[in-house]
Amino acid sequence: MDKINQTKVTFFIIKGISDVPALQAPIFLLFFLIYLFTIGSNMTILLLVCLDHHLHTPMYFFLCNLSIMDMCCSTVTLHNTFIMFLTKSNQVSFSTCMAQIYFFSSFTSNELLILTAMSYDRYMAICNPLHYPVVMKMKNCYVLACACWFVGFIEIIPFMVLTLNLTCYKSNIINHFFCDIMFVIKLSCSDTSALIILVFTEGLLLLSLTPFLLTFISYLFIIATILKIRSSSGRQKAFYTCSSHLTVVVLLYSTLFCQYLMPSSMDTLDFNKGFSLFNTAAVPILNPIIYSLKNEDVKAALKRKIKL
Image (tube, rainbow, N blue to C red; front, side):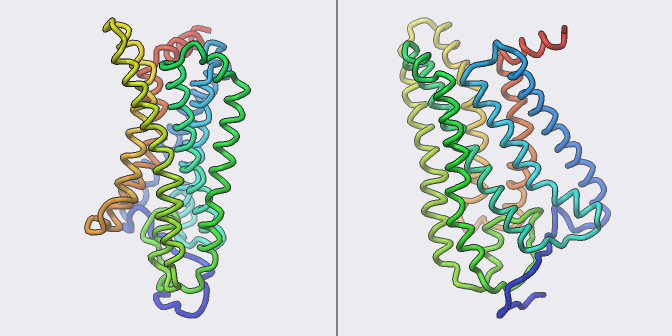
């Protein structure tokens, strides 16, 4: 199905992580273990926050939202690898592919927005501690989190409308392990100029650059406030409260930059696939590890529950 110039495709063929037959079983086992660890570690964070009243704070409320999104991102992308191995079929229906694009894009957008909300929480805690209990009360946190979820799902709709209107494709073979909007655009022989403009204006400026700038500005104020603290122990304590979040932010934005914003000379399919693997498989595991290893509250809560 290499030449499809007049009709809309009814299915896509996902090449997967590797097309070498001997590697299929090891890849399935590896990523199934990664997926189980992702679900287990993030579920542990969720249970700890729910069960331990010491963690009933805005920071850990937003961390729960981040854990849910990590599990959703892994599920919506890695399930293709599992299904293809079990069914021995790489075929994915057109509607399933479009649904995967929508949910993956939405969850990624949601994650960036939640990280922005978390940066605002850290800003209030360090820069305006006297106003923190009033501004970041749980009612406001619920509203802020709901807004992040709502905006994340709504702002992807224009992309999907234009993607669904693509009427022909040069090929229906996607050299990836899930349906990614950039790969679908490259396959289309329809006029994709409007969609490309939307991806690099709304997608880059609104969905990615705006949350990044808001997070960056928050940390400029945080760093400026920390530097004004006279005692070294006070500076270390203030930085420690936001070090986990800052690590996650740097990790996620660095991965997304390498995945979507590298110069065209470096934009190879295998290169993009590699960063997609890291973003959808490794990052959801690293987030709970980072928050567990670098956070005394989480470690203390885990010890309390283990002793029980």
